[in-house]
Image (cartoon, rainbow, N blue to C red; front, side):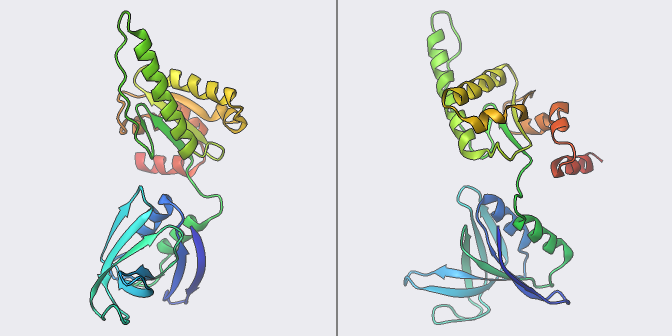
Length: 256
């Protein structure tokens, strides 16, 4: 997230102008805007004109896959197309600026969130693949059971599944900056996927992925569903790699 400008008085009044860039930024915005706040952003109407509309936020609806946040409220500054007090909807989108005024003033919690969201190099400490789910993307592939005389069908299906997971990892996991990448599964699939990942990295001369090999951890989980991720992240192997990170500190606080 980019901090475009900031004007906050000593009494907490004022505004900040922000430019969200991805889904994580939208999550920060979702937690930053409260009922009663005023938001100023561009709105495209059916007349194909761009106008600035100020709206008091009453609810938010984060859409994770499209990096869009929908805000509903009453117009506080009318123009030719919207009347004062009319209910209006604003769509906050990635790479579009918006200005935020806090109804109760800017407190230390809100300012700290902005600082965290706009800090250079900020991001996650850990990435994870839970077989069969990948964080940020779900992959469903039918894999026939191993049967006598039908091993080739099983192997082809697994190859297709691993190829889809591998493509998703390259697309969604910034393995160069993450402290740890977890592969979790109930059985031995995690070992097979791990071998496949670095076999492909070697074949395609993906040096960045090869250099990240020490960050990858194979962890057992009792379920292949996404809530098995919680179990995997509590493993000693992951805790060792994440010592001193924000993720580890928050985990300790939750355990207490």
